[in-house]
Image 1: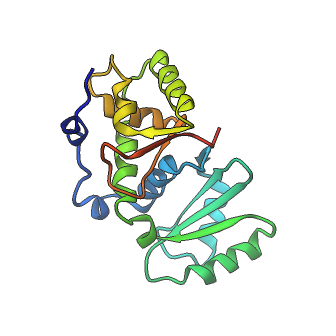
Image 2: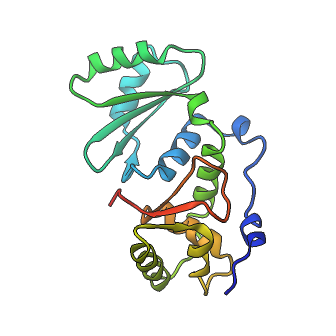
Image 3: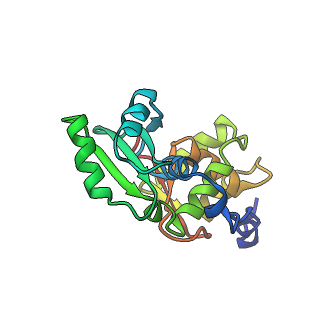
Length: 194
């Protein structure tokens, strides 16, 4: 199958008002799904109650993320609040815990959020185990990374080959460079998270 640049632009674009309509927890989850360093993550009712009892601003969110080398508590807070002061206070409640406080503005950076949203939107797209193997083999043969257009060309059975690659990224088997807008030469890498 010949994958053309037009196939890559056929992806649904992120909603222009995504930043207004989605809650902070949705944005944080999207960024964690797309982050190559995060193996997996989850919410914690215990940590939620600690966060609510602290002086965190209303709407703040916490996730427990597993990285290859440590467990990290990530707290997302609304803009306009001092995240460094909140981080110090949370560390006093949980001595020894790795806590990272991020602002809403940092989470909403473009194109990071746009590409993250595309990965999340593609998460349920069906990809055969054979396609997973072909993609892993291709990336291994090319030193661990390749352009998106080459990876999409391997998805011969997929109706939407780019979405298939993004679905594999959502499963954490590979990672997509989210620091630049999605395009034919976007870097696809074997995930270091596993």
